[in-house]
Picture 1 (cartoon, one colour):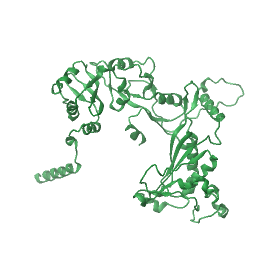
Picture 2: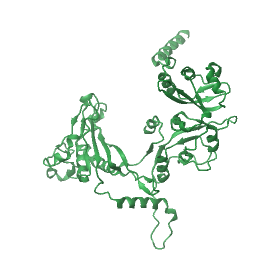
Picture 3: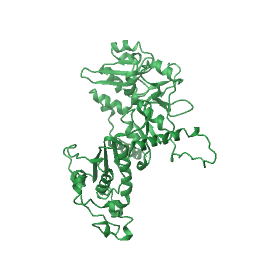
Picture 4: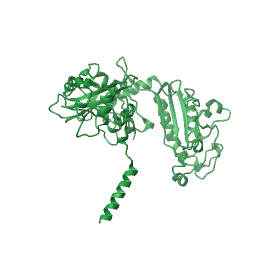
Length: 467
């Protein structure tokens, strides 16, 4: 789901990984001076596992399965995830902690505990003014943890011995005297009846200094350890040194590798020359997902993402990165066996030469976009005379269709120049979107599923009457 949603952004700056968030590995990056460092984040979202009792409207099972011990069982996991999240933050960065639960043990108790552990290096931020109109309740500073037998306790000393492994001291609220310093009222509680939604809890933490358990020495040791893992094949054997330590394997399904273009990549010269690509585009930022055989698709990533993948591919489970920029199009009559892909066009269009660009008027662009017949693309003779003259200088193959409006509207899309035709090579959803932006008529693309069902029923009745 995350990969699918991220593709809508068509961004070369996204990396999707798959790890236990409570022990998310450090990501190694290359600093400007060439040294190695640990990547820190400006923003982190911790949408932690929770009991989900705030979803009681849409999830009827909650009414039958819920008990007071559910939150107690998740408190530790939630704290570990939150702790790792604030470790990954850079100083000045912010973290959002959220659940779809209403239990204070999963919410305020976790926030209170991390604030205590942080010893002043974290601050709970007041974000009440960030979303005007949002109806919510403030966080609470007092609550009563409960055991599975639905008995509530005011202090840990009251908890029977049989429940002490479930109800822990850290789950209790802060001392009334100390409570004001934690500002738990800055947390946000969204109740189902407030806006006819589910129930949610949100808290925003800002890191104002390194955490007590963080130090520069620890960071250096982590980097050194990571380097040793990568170069373990070069370590010499020392007699009587004990068994060789095995490298930890990444568990689960193994994804296809990310193979970046080499300096002498065979397919790159033909792509570069055909599209007139500027030398500013680093070919090292292009990658494929296959080691051997024909390259089906070519993806583009930003230099920062390229550095992350190159430094961490062996120790981090990478699921997806890059935006599709070129797709294979085997055609011996053309000078290049790849065509442009609409998904990644915005990332590389600044580097494409004028030899593969065609400037179109609004009427010509609407003509191309309105043609949805793949067998009969629009003939160039129906286009404006000025457009036909421009096309005479464009060879067959993939190209960029440009529109520059007087109102500041600029559109770029993939096209295909045929022998006597020109077509817009974009997905149907994008095609309809562009037509609407240009003020064209999209009625021919409207589909009424109810009308189709009625026609199907009528046809079935007619066939029955005939029989």
